[in-house]
Amino acid sequence: MSHQHLATSVATGATSSPTPGSDDPTVPISRALINALDTADETSPAQADTATGHGPVSPSSKAGGLDVGELPLSVWATAQTSPASQRKGRYVPESTAHPAKMLPAVAAHAIHAYTRPGELVFDPMAGSGTTLVEAIDAGRRAVGVEYEPHWVSVAQANLGLARERGHDHDGELVHGDARQLPSLLPEKYLGQVALIITSPPYGPSTHGQVVTSDTGSRDGKVHKFHHRYGSALDRGNLANVGHHRLLAGFTRILTGCAAVLRPGGHVAITVRPWREHSELIDLPSQIIACGHAAGLVPVERCVALLARVADRELVARGSFFQRDFIRKQREQGLPLHLIAHEDVIVLRRPLETAGSQAAPDTRWGRS
Image 1 (tube, rainbow, N blue to C red):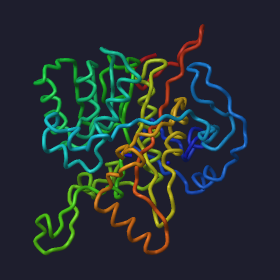
Image 2: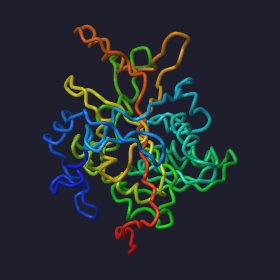
Image 3: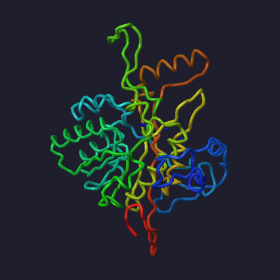
Image 4: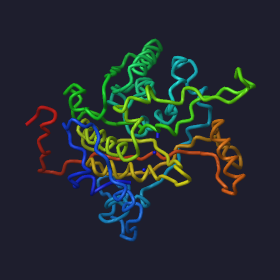
């Protein structure tokens, strides 16, 4: 599941800031704010993040005070086997119907890079349970939240398969809206999570699966299936809202995530840009700004390959609709290429300095 640039205005603006506890789960973000972020000054020098030795963070640059172009980069070779082979025998067949599945190898890489055995991994938008399965297979504990009842059932079935493989580590799944994390998760998880792995929903930009005349189409035409999240009429589903509400809702989710992270804990978010009316929407940079607005610090911007590395080139694993779109765009003179990677934005909860005390978090019933 993955996509964009928000920030100080989100955190401080009275009309744009998500308000924990408000009745409306998301608040629209104005087009003027997004346009301003896309054209903000990028010339400020970066400052090193001394807490981790990673990513420079600038006080006055593109993503609402963040020089996102200066974050350290690394490449994760996560598509050397096909998605089907990564899931074969480890996930129930119903998992393939999810419209925006995370590659198991992406979740596994993040878990091994940012946690140790026995630590707790969390996914606030768990989908078919990829993060949870990879966590307990790696000897970690796992907890997730999922909005759609169908995917709760599928994720629980996948956890059952993992337990049959002999992995008896804790794995818990909660049904609910991740924008309401403080009222969903048991208090025992507050400040205990070592790593959060998730992705914002792609909504209408998902490709799903396809049937053609060669694969059983009754009328000989191409048809999509398994390309939508739940009911399109459910406006409470973050996958069905517009771009601005998606960013506001995801900021609210990350704010809840910051409360369950331990100091120094990490958040890994898989995300990619997409095109809307031929305009490239820079969702990765906007997601970095959402994290900043939630009080998280960006430390890395990685690349998770969705293509196999051959001797001299990357072999893309594009869907039918990706290939069809690229062909049509090239016929119109626009030299686009198949998607070969997605960004992995890595954020961190700041370490508490000596003598400092965290502010009371009344949302979790603490004072």
